[in-house]
Image (cartoon, rainbow, N blue to C red):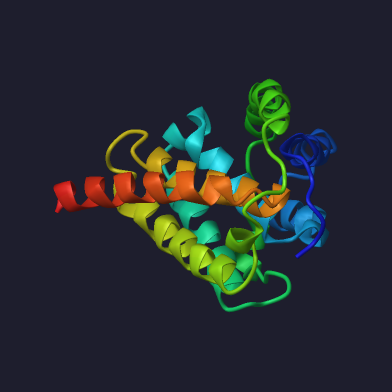
Length: 191
């Protein structure tokens, strides 16, 4: 795993790519690849969690991306692989810029809270188990799309884990577990 970085740094990188017109999923993955699995999970999780997640089809695409990235993390792969078809999908440039601009003030405030702690929860084998739960959360986003913004619950859990992986803050893994439990409860109620 790479060194800890701030969430603001990740958002700034996504915003820079979007402003340059690089909003294809593959371009965004390539831009964040050197930073590890955390930022790569953070991007689709934020897109699904914020108002952009209310656009039909967006939670499903984000859920599939989360599943593919997190599954690879759970298998201990050093860097993620994304299928060519998904790499070609593009997120609307203005939506991506707006999402990062809305999230940036919150991220900069939250960056003061995140720091490396409870390191055992951010290292293998625990991190691989947490990545597996993220993969399951990604899949859960697909059926939850039928309820407006319900996919935001598993997206929140993945966001917390992604921030945890990025900043190496194991305390967020605990919070993510609570969000996953909420999402699982919602799925059970839907069944």
